[in-house]
Length: 92
Image (cartoon, rainbow, N blue to C red; front, side):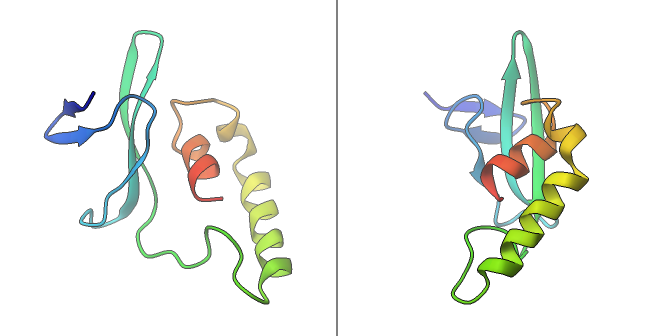
């Protein structure tokens, strides 16, 4: 079931996808909560620090992950309709 929304195709609601051609954001998701539908773009294009830790970076990555969650904790708690929630779920 693919959904066309404002010229973009999504696999479904609440299913994030990469946006490699977007100038600033690396991912997009068509978030749906109840009857509300919202296109949310999140993540810095070309960021090298997010994702799974590489060899020898585990302590540094743990610190970055912890820092991100502390900095954006209130916004993550807002749920599916916030970019921080999706960045936390997909990138960190």
